[in-house]
Length: 314
Image (cartoon, rainbow, N blue to C red):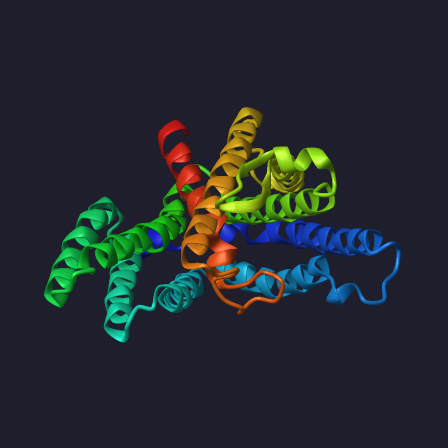
């Protein structure tokens, strides 16, 4: 029932220290940007790091609204799906009928996760059946390629991201709002410091020998992963206080490891997609970040990894 998916309001009080930590982190981030800009405030908003900072000022309030007001959060997730469909359709040159099929699968996925979570694991079979039937009805030579592309996207964005909805089931063992904030901070700072480390250590000659998959993402290096690790540990440390009475310290370390590994995998998965379709970004909706898919690529895999770890081991 829908009542099982409403987050308990008893966790609202913890948002005061959480908001304070977010404000302090944003101030520290601004100081870091000025330092990276050689101590000059002038022109920082024209730099890539400055643009990303402004993008976070847009993203953070939306995320907080989604966490605080659960029903709005479900709606926001559907909007994310819809924008993701738009960006994916532009990359792959899909038509309006394809987008309608995607919207239908998105709605079914979100409703199933919200109202009947026990049937959520049947959805991949539904994607396979619906997309196969739809692709066969097109009667095209390229139908198989189009079908596999649609199934991949359905599993990646619809099914993957909707694990965030399933996490509400953990409200009997921990404060779910705090878990979402923990994920936001950890994933966000992981991305931020991966970018900073990768960009500002790229001048080192050794960085060219430390690429992970240079034909997919030439700028992704193991030095960037060091930034991922630093960001996750920093973000997790800042927000772990809100989960400390629910999860012991070793759970925090395991979650941090999951966020690093699955976050990098998610980032490279989208890079693989963009490299194939020869685009730099999935879109331009968010200043400094690109499109919606560029912003959620890490979160998709992280949400699945965290969900199944908590489901199996807590």
